[in-house]
Amino acid sequence: MPTTQQHPEPWLRGTHSELPAVLRAVIHAFELACEDVHYWTADLSEHELHAAPSGLTSIAFHLRHIPRSLDRLLTYAEGNQLSAEQILSLKTESDFSVSRDVLISEFNAGIKSATARVRALASADLNQLRGVGKRQLPTTVGGLLVHLADHTQRHTGQIVTTSKLVKAARLEEITAVHNVA
Image (cartoon, one colour):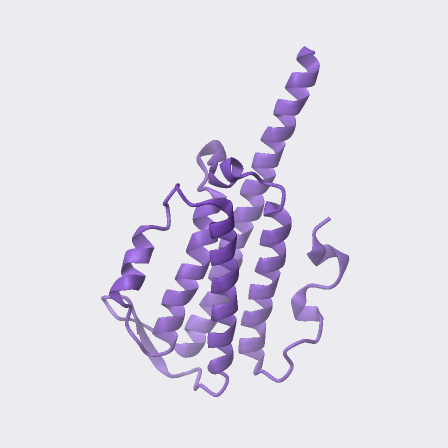
């Protein structure tokens, strides 16, 4: 059973009450993502993290995309433009040569960094305009913060779903081996 079902989800734990509601909700979404990712990937092999069952995007991709997209979106929320390094990292999110340890380490470090950066925005005007991307598409600091939570949870859900498919395939293989024997 996932740790998130053994006790209330982060948003129901009464934590981070020193933060404004929007920032608190974003950090709670990060915490829930961490719990779900660690639970659903704990027993997956490196090969399974890179698997693409039924043509789905691999868990490895999502583990890299979440922290890297958080970094990019927070850069915009902070009123900055992406660096050459951030643009390059976007192009390597699908790198299949990355080990399990590196994937999990990058995910954890990215969530930790994003949490600190969200906290640093505690006194920001959430209605302050921001531009996203080369085309400077219009949004606000608050819009970016809400999207941080939404985007993180969307990709975490894909990790959970893909993990369930990988584990089901593993169970089918075990059953097939036992039926042959």
